[in-house]
Length: 310
Image (tube, rainbow, N blue to C red; front, side, top):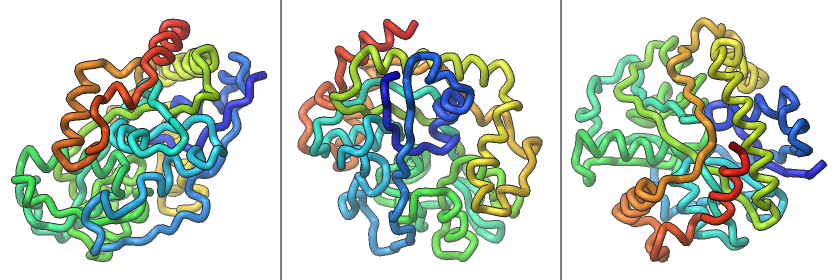
C-alpha cells in the first residue's frame, strides 16, 4: 500500500475524498490515506484592521502542514492555491482540479437594510483571506459595485465563526458554505447572492503520476456514487460539523438542498481558464512575482495522471 498523507478537508470542499476514504475506495486503489489536522492550533478571531490578503499568511491553514513536510497533498480553492504555490517554500505545484464544485452565498443578518448586492457598497464584508469565500466575494461584488467600494476585513476560516460574527453585528455581510448557509437561513438571514467555485489539488514531489492517478480513480468512483444518490450523502455535511456544533447537529438532511451539491470528475485545469484566473488575481495585486501561470502547475504530472485515471 502506498501511504498518502492529506490535510483535513470539510465536506463543502472535499466530500468525494471523504466518501472515497469512508467507503474504502482509496484502499481498493492501493492507497493508505492518512489525515493531518490543518486547523489544530490555528487562532480563530475577527480583525477589522486587516483589510487585505497582503497582511496575512497564505499558509495560516491550508498548506500549513504541507509546507512543514507533514502532508503530501491538500485541496483548497483554485485562487488561493495559485497564491500559495506562488509563495511556496517547498516547491509545491497544482496538479488538477478537485471533484467538488463548492457552493457559496453572500449572507446578511435578518435585520440588515441590505437586500441586493449593490447595497453592499462600502459596507464591511467578513472573509477569510486566501480562502474560496474570500475570492468568491470579490467575484460576486465586482459585478455590482466599483472595486474601490468593496470593503473586506479578516474573519476566520470556518463558516460558523463568520456566521457568529454576522449575528453579533461585527460585520455587515459574510460569505458562507454549507451546511452553514442552511443554518443561516433557519436563523432568518438573507442570501443576497450565490455562486459556485472550483478548487485544486496541490502536491509535493513525493506524489508521482501513478499515485495521483490512483487517487483520482477512487475519487471518480466516489463522484459516481454521490451523483447516483445525492440525498444519501448529504448527512456528511451535518455529521462533520455536528460533532462540535449542536445547532448543526439539529439540522435534518431534508433541510439541505441537493442542488447545492455539485460534484464532477477531477480534471486538468484548462489552459484558457488558468490564464484568466492568473490575470484576475494579478489585477487584485496578487501573484506579482509570478510571470506565468504555468509556473504554478505541474503540467506533465497533471496530464499523465488524469489520462491514467480514465
